[in-house]
Every structure is written in structure tokens, then in C-alpha cells.
Amino acid sequence: MAELVLTTFDWVPEAPRGFVRDLRVRWALEEAGLPYSIATTPVRDRPAEHFLHQPFGQVPWLTDGDLSIFESGAILLHLGDKSEALMPSDPRGRAVVLEWVLAALNSVETAVLPWAILKFEKFADDSPEKRRFETFLQGRLDRLEPVLANREWLAGPFSIADILMADVLRVADGLGGLTSHPACRDYVARATARPAFVKAHGDQLAHFAAADRAQGAPTA
Image (cartoon, rainbow, N blue to C red; front, side, top):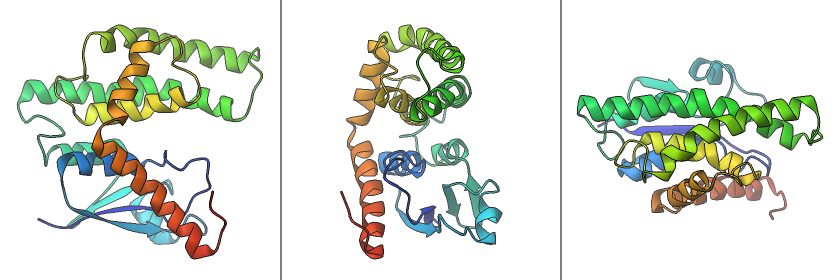
């Protein structure tokens, strides 16, 4: 088997640490027990090679032999084909995982991200933009709540669909967006209590803390 190499930024500021999307891939690799190594690309003055791997200048990307794959959803689908710990091989089970992968990225993350941006930028609660995106997000969560109230994981066994959905929802949770949706909140708690998440999250924080030390920057 070719070595799996996950590329992320060499450093990021404090705010996004623990949320950079290489975490999703680290989590999946840990769940599956697949060996991998970490490579870095500069966050400042991104070289031309970066854009050959990731045309939008983002991270992560995964190298698997002569394959280079960008977008966290695409990477997780690739890893799902390597391990039934991430995605079942039977057509029915695979189809359920695929639909929830797309739901996490298309139906839920598209509601969470603009709302979260407005939260970070401290738009007034009564601003039209804030009200519009709050309504959009709460509508999505209202539909998701009864699903998560009746099952432990989205597609039966834990899968890449849960990695993506939980990672999206924990952004909303961290900003108080799940207060009216206890099943969503409990789901995030279950997912992030998994040893693979705990290790992946700790490894990402340690990675950027090491970059601080290498640059001589103060650490928290």
C-alpha cells in the first residue's frame, strides 16, 4: 500500500485551530487505523505547487501513491473505499452513507458557515443578514433534530457521514447554535468523545503549537 500523506498548513492563527479541515481526514484515518504522515504547505506566500494540488489555495489534500485528492469530502470518500470502518461495502449501506455525506456538505454546512461568519464578525442580532441566516440554519436543524433523536449514527454504524456531519455541527455548537436542538447537541458530544476524534483534535492542536515554538511565538 502506498503511503498516505496528509498535507495541511504549516501554521494558522489561534481562532481556527481545532477546526482546520485536515482534522476531518485525521479523524477518518484514526478511525480506520490507516498509517499516514503529515506534510505541510506555507500558509503565507503559498507556492505554485500548492495550487496544483488544491486550486483554491486551501487545505487539506491527500496523496495516495500517484493520486492527489483535495476537498475533505472527496478525501473521506476515497478513504471510505479503503475501510469498512468508514463506509460499508454493500450497495445499500454505501448509498445511505453517500446521501448523508452530501447532506452534511450541501444541506447543513451551507447553512452553518454563513451564520458562523456573521457570528464571528459580530453582526447585530437584529440585523437582516443575521436574522435571515439564523432562520435558514434553524430550519435545517429542525429537520435534522428528529433524525438524530432516533438513531445513534446517521447510516447505522459510525461512518464518514458522521465525521462530516459532526464536524459541521460542532461549529454551530461552539457558537451556541444548537441550544434549541438537544439531539443535535448530544450527537456532537457522542461523536467528539470517540477516541479517534480526541486523538485527531489533539494532534492538530499539537501541530500548530509546535509551529509556534519553532517560530519563537508565545503559546497560550
